[in-house]
Image (tube, rainbow, N blue to C red; front, side, top):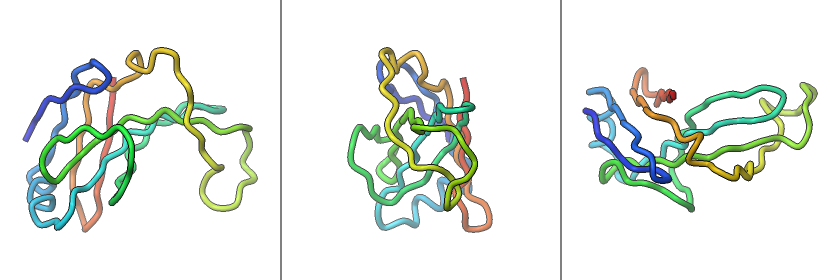
Length: 118
């Protein structure tokens, strides 16, 4: 299933696999897919799936909402406890310039999988 949404004035195509559509229909509450663009020593794209979240959410279906979040770290390094350093929102003057063009979501082996691109 493909659906087009508007995020910060830009059109984003959200593609859901058949497995994702089926898994979403079995949920009791909506899933949130956060497209995270990470700025620090490198740039990383990651889709994080969350159960609850406040903020600027765009509904794709009754069971799926998305948001775009640029983040950064305060320092570069690899000596952090856990899998990554603490993140903070990254204040971009024109965030619409960084909004992805597409988001793909799948559900395999009881896990949500997502990717986005420009």
